[in-house]
Amino acid sequence: MDAVTAYLPSPLDRPPVVGIPADAVKLTGKQARRPARKKALEGDESEGVVGIERSCDPDAAFCGLVFKVQSDVHGDLCFMRVYSGTLIGGTRVVNARTGDKELVNQIWRVQADDREKIETDRAIAGDIVGVIGPKVAVTGDTLCDASEPVLLESIDFPETVISMAVEPDTSAERKKLAEVLERLARQDPTFTARVSEETGQTIISGMGELHLEVIRERMQRDFGLTVRVHKPRVSYRESIRKAAEATGEFQRTSAGASQFARVRLSITPTAEECAAELENHLDPFALSPVLTESLVQSLHEELAGGGTLGYPLMNVRVQLLEVEVREEETTEVALQAAASDAMHRLLTEAGVLLLETGDATGSRHSG
Image 1 (cartoon, helix red, strand yellow):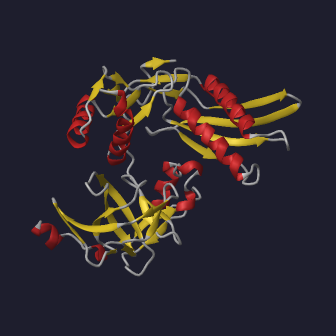
Image 2: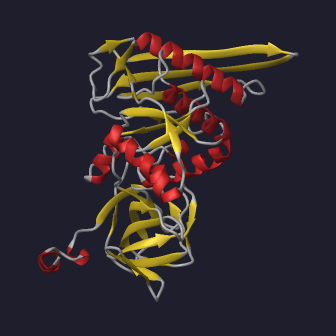
Image 3: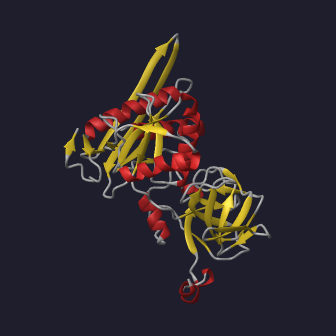
């Protein structure tokens, strides 16, 4: 630690940190796709995303990066580095990923296992502190001043590789199980929990059997919750054989009322291993904001629902190219139905591959 203090540069000796505008985040909270973010952070604006520099200046607009979330008796403790500006306890800041406003209740100085509340209740650029109060922030999130939002470079976590079903010892603890799993997932970005639509079971996923066993032990040790577990299953993914384009349509007349929508999509495989990405290339005035958000959310759900076998899609990029609407006839339901039809046609044309754990090529199984 003495060597760290003596030889490593102080925050003032480091160049400004580079982020991207928060409005570069796609609708429904999805981030701008990785190549665009990477190029912007390197100063390349060819993808249309412009990098923003933030210097280590306590008088600048505040921004900080949450690099860890830890359970605490007073509430979840967010470990954060303040890159610019000043963070004051009792104020609200913006989560650049989600757009939610987060309340910063307390600011703590953390040294190993020792913590003390900062008397001035403020942290300035260069500080690394623990913050109690944010309810939405997870590891990798940027908290910033609402007047000048910026999204700092985050961490790309690997996809989970194994899953198992869990259930509480008694039905009375089902609600507690959901709350505990939500807290654990917030603290550990490589752990996820969901409820299966088909079986109603709670499914937890992680990086291996040992990882899930540690999660199970934490539930019992930290939260007093005993659960029964089922046999682990490998988490499969689906991808595609080739690029494709397709149009989906919904047209129906019921009780004298007509509904209509047409959606055109394209899909391409990506070189890097990553979760499915969605790009919105619609004209900004093609749809109302409400209909746009509903359509994009519907497409994200289609991607999560997977291809022909129902496993989540990965290593693909889907582009929303065009919509055709009719006044008085185009509704959220019509758009969602057209999007579902377009996605089905798209995957049929592209050809679906079944990927095993750690297989980014799709060469082992085909669907």
